[in-house]
Length: 121
Figure 1: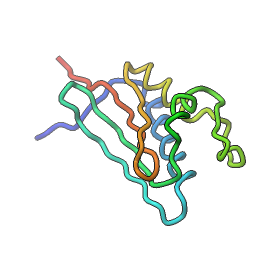
Figure 2: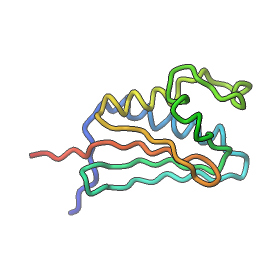
Figure 3: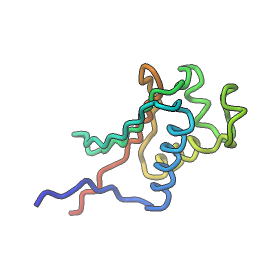
Figure 4: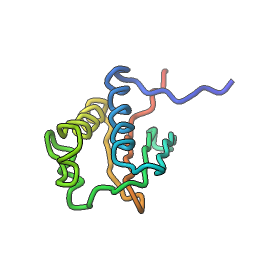
């Protein structure tokens, strides 16, 4: 029997981080758009949870800013939210010794949440 991927961490925080990524993808992808969720095991002992959409995306120059608390793009100021979603994802990744990367999905945004795989000894 093949085992699934396991990551060691706070279940509630990891769930909230993933929920935030999915909420953003749904919120910023137009009707009829596409959202993909992928789980990849990396050889270096990491797993990547990828949420990609074909929405408007985030300009390269603003990607670091949106990971800060309360920062919102001008285009998002009229939509619900307070600028905490991606900063929470970044904080959860850091707490779990991982990282979050924002990449171009051409069109749209590709968010990669990279976490360490748990290997029991």
